[in-house]
Length: 250
Image (cartoon, rainbow, N blue to C red; front, side, top):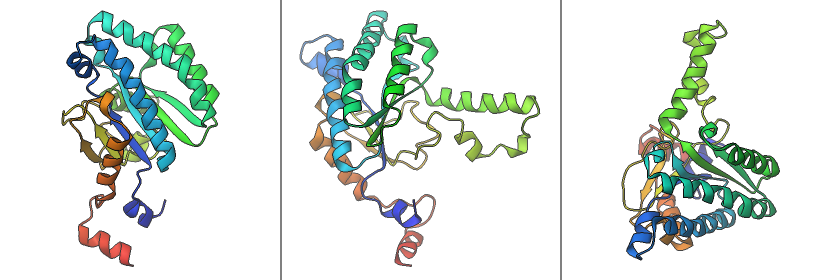
């Protein structure tokens, strides 16, 4: 991508979303928390559709953080079952619409059956190019950076690389989103205004958008508002606004 495209693109190539508020949505309706998680799947489907229609190339969703294991065991179990059910029901639909599915995170903590279904889903959709849907499951930004730097430290200890050759670019090449563009737009629903250990490295220059809408309430109109916000931003990447304008006028 050229510099002018990077600075002037009005539709983000890559959108990352923290899908917050499922439990509160359910509680407001007198329903169990799990009902909110099931309702949240409808918003996932809506986001996939709007990304396909708007030309977004990558969509990363924070489905289950490495800290979410602290939740009640019953809720965690239901979430794992929902994950497997969603894989069974949704992957063929994604494949039909040429969507590639990737799962990032420490998947060894999952049951073997779930790991097998993840691998099968990724294999089935591997060659699709309309949209890459990335699900962060048992993922944490600190874990991501740690596993990348640990691997480099092990290489250095074996004498395969020298410490002074470790650069930000080399670290980035070992992260979960290696080879993909960094998110242009970050969205968090549910009213909280923090990134909660999500893509800590990759969000360095991402535009941040927070909405009070709970995740099951976040529909195509709400996403359009987020895209409008992004289109109005001037992306600088460390430069001044005047420098960006001069680059674009050149």
